[in-house]
Image (cartoon, rainbow, N blue to C red; front, side, top):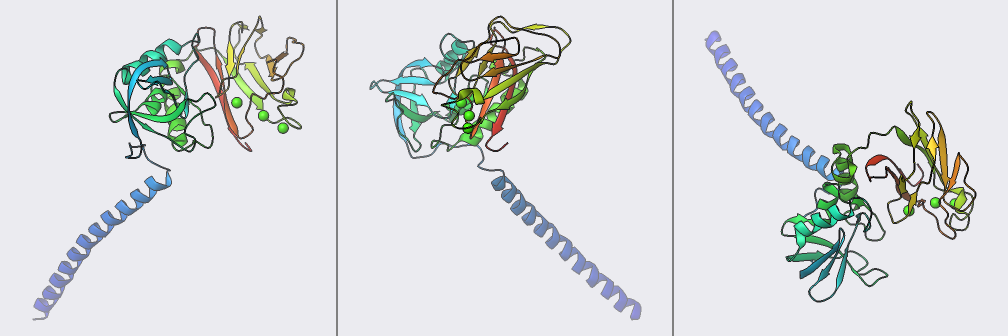
Length: 290
Ligand SMILES: [Ca+2]
Ligand SMILES: [Ca+2]
Ligand SMILES: [Ca+2]
């Protein structure tokens, strides 16, 4: 009897433990699901999805990588991204890629805080079917993320996509393999940077063991500021600074030549260095306070 009781007790205990294991598995699975959901939410918004708030429009033609014209005559500038300007390396590729996504199609336009820019262009997130065109341009390396507050709804997604494209060397991020690096950037000089732009500078260093001729190399910000290097040869280990304002160039100090304007936004920006063929050499990103 004792044995039986014990057996029964053991059996009951066994059943209880089985139930507990099943419960635990269920609890664990439920917990895992909750944790995963929480983690996904804490990583910021997931991939953007097309919303019902917007308007359908017919594309008449593609102007460039980030601008289209609609059949009703309105021009649309894509929000949050910037493709190379006409005449610059990768401008033609960016336009062709944009055409492959939207030319002659009906698109879905979603606006953010500001509906139009200073040129009267409609500012929009553009969807071609389920493809988020703005994001796809960045993903494939035809555009860089270009955050202009207050229109920042998908800014994080654009920044992440640019980083991934850069790491994969896609499109305009195909590496040039030049050992010149952006080693420092001083984005906030004394006083107002627009009045005294020479308080801002960016420093390049030749980290290789052969001289690099920088003629035709370009430095660019996230926006439209572009500087093209003249005849400057950077010796191995040497550095050169490019100041935003005007001044006399020397072997170690060059000048962008701006007046009444700054290059490096104090609340965050990125410097891009490219070779004369537009191949990516290096970039330097910062955020406010970094
Ligand atoms: Ca600045
Ligand atoms: Ca300042
Ligand atoms: Ca800037």
